[in-house]
Image 1 (cartoon, rainbow, N blue to C red):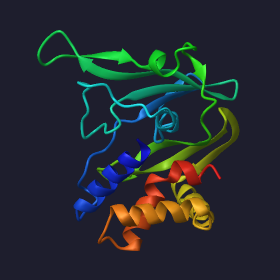
Image 2 (cartoon, rainbow, N blue to C red; image 1 turned 90 degrees about the vertical axis):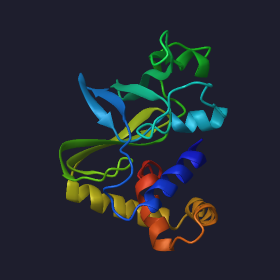
Image 3 (cartoon, helix red, strand yellow; image 1 turned 135 degrees about the vertical axis):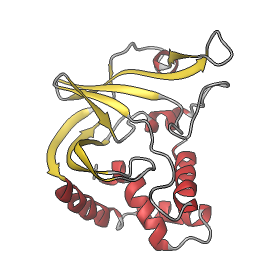
Length: 217
């Protein structure tokens, strides 16, 4: 599922000449100290990919939500907790949709809320006003960022960064990521999927799309 989403976003990103094109994605939400925030990463994706989970037939998918679901999260006692994840299924009327939780489908032996032990990565939480708007994915820039690094569901680091500090932090982490075998493999795959694009275009895409991964290193 991750690879499919990556290819879809790459196709969209490179089909338009300006950052004003494409579609912003509806984010997951995360509650921290009783306050609800937008979450610019999707911690459920790695588990969905591991399970080979597919969206059920008839689920509402839009250009504003390519993944087809939304999830809600919370930081509790320095652990990342999944509160719920839901999809939109056909309702009673011809144009109606109803929300249905998929937590029991994914974790039949557990009940929500549950600690996200499958997840290691970086939670990216934008703060303040938008300083540069990009109408695609999670591409817009903000005044401030909160970055919460997680290992097997446990919070291992919390960072409060200005917009400028966040960009420098990303650049440093991405430079380290470029030295890994994982990066080289992903670059080869994207070159095959995006024939005709320059390496500069692909690297720009990777720096945006793979931020959750390389910020966790």
